[in-house]
Amino acid sequence: MTVSNLDAFLDKLQEEIFDEAKQALGERGFDRWRNPKYNGRMENPDGWGRVTGECGDTMEIYLKFNGNRVADASYFTDGCASSMVSGSFAAELTLGKTPEELTDITADQILEAIGRLPDDDLHCTTLAARTIQAALDNYMGSMVKKG
Image (cartoon, one colour):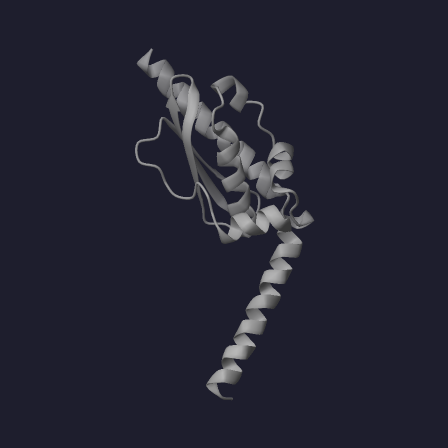
């Protein structure tokens, strides 16, 4: 096999993988997977949470408040593409929200923001929603201590 044949084979393989991922994640999910937003651990968050899901993926969500609203958010996961996309959209959904409004963020809202996920990966949105609540619990606990 020549170098040009190998390059052509690899280009075709990558295109097939991307087509499958786009079918599985939908347009918004695929775009977020290829161009992640809000990814990474945050230095000195006001609240953060870590939850391990039923599949073994672990997600972390970090929140920074300005006054009574989320001013910055990020996530980190060791999980699959669906966990990554769920964490990214979950972090985005927290922005501008009050603690009370954060309690209303559900797995269904995260899925609606993404568009779709494979049926076998729907639990990733639940993991993201639970991780938001863990971060909120951590924040509220620190506020009580500051009291």
